[in-house]
Length: 244
Image (cartoon, rainbow, N blue to C red; front, side, top):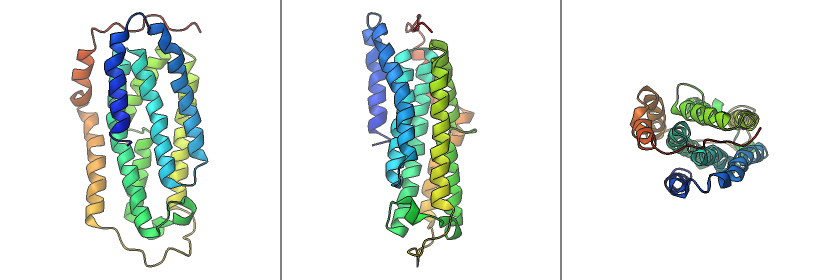
């Protein structure tokens, strides 16, 4: 769902919107603001989640709000950032769901309060949890940072008011990501977690195959951004944004 279906829908928007220009550019404005507002609302929902997989799923919807806003603005920077963020979030959400599944296999519960304190039993898996949450917050040196910076810059150039909404969304993303990490890995170990199996090599290999591409793509971002930017460089951008 988070890795394939959401990205196919976003790519469909990228392919369809150039066909609607220039008559319908003014119709994009309400949808852009709706996408920005959706980032704040879904991030707020994440703060109230007790189910680990539900939190990760709502997090995916929140990140897709940035992608939708970027695709509707239709500038080379915004489309490049949308493409980078789609690929980056596809890897990030996948590793988060993999980590949630490893917790469920051992605790048989998706409730975060019943699967807390795992750092004491699975310390190496805690390292993967930390890296995954840092990638979800778009911290360097991951391709998430590049995508979000391009999108935030494009939305700010489109309208200065959007910096408030994107800033609030970024703050809420960092808040629920840290909440997810601290709740599942810290705190006192519950009494129901006994005879827990240790981590296996295949699990660490799976996490590494998610993390390494995120770091390597930042060293050569033109693999995913270069051809896409050149393809859309001739497309007419939105020349007039809303009145501030």
